[in-house]
Image (cartoon, rainbow, N blue to C red; front, side):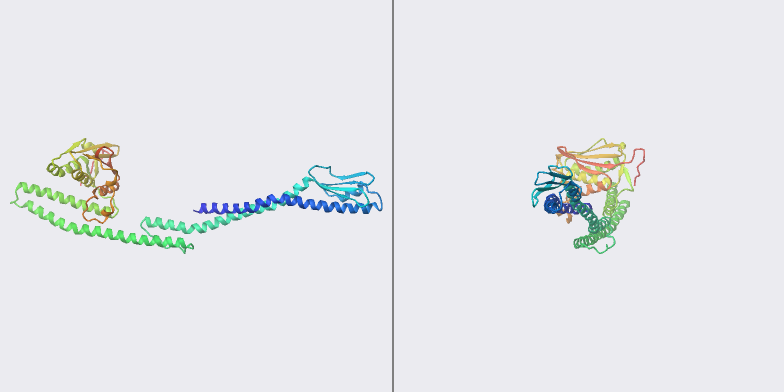
Length: 417
């Protein structure tokens, strides 16, 4: 902004100087020529009178004429008897001259050199040129000072906006002289206060919801564990109870991860698990619903060589498998490949690919929805980004999701929670 203001002010000054100076510079030569012509005519009249007066006392000679001339001037006197006397510089076609008859007979011609006229034109132009240059310099200095003063409030606004973006409103700026800047600052601080209030309420809601959910979840888990320890519990029921306890643990982990995301932290960075184990566990959880729907889940290229991924990846796999069962068709295929420090997991079904990438976007009606339907893929994409990866929808004819996640080197043993 400052540079643009300086350029505008200097351009305005140059324009004003051009509008004033160029016409004046074009007029000055004509004015000088007109003035010099009048002076030559008056000087010629004076020389005519002097010569007539001198002829009364004696003849006119060259010695009489030369003291009357200045530099770059010429005089020629043609007497009545035909005698011609010349004094001064040689004649030139561009000289300004005038001829006047002398009382008593003869005529006198007086001329000034064109070089002298050009010199006087230059002398007349120099003040205009120097005045224009001085005006531009003064305008440039004033433009710099004025641009600094005008841009300072907006620089402070940029610092305030940057501080708001980092989570701090920053100190109150000094009195802003520009009314528009004061209005922008007030709007920024009001918006920051509103956002801070909303974010605080969301964090408080997430913390309260997590606390309120953990208590009944823990109670249910204890009751299920107690039931599994009863001697009257059949082995088949005990196995189902153990499975239910594991699912409750997964639910508790999911709640903790969502709470970390609400706080702006990266969920699951402290723990990781082998990817093949994570995929196998997800397949085991979703195999029964797939069989009930007359479909199957196949694995391709899934092995220990894939390495380990953050534990939160299991939440994304659950969403992808649920999406494939609810919205997809045919059998589901899970494949994995590893490249350098990243691993890619693809979950594909035989249904047609959705148009565009709107499946990852939260629709306005979902922002306040309580059912949770339709936000799984958007939440999974955000979770993948927080883990340092990406969730993509491939351009194949059938639906294929690719989950790309960072994975430590194969030589590093994964940590299992």
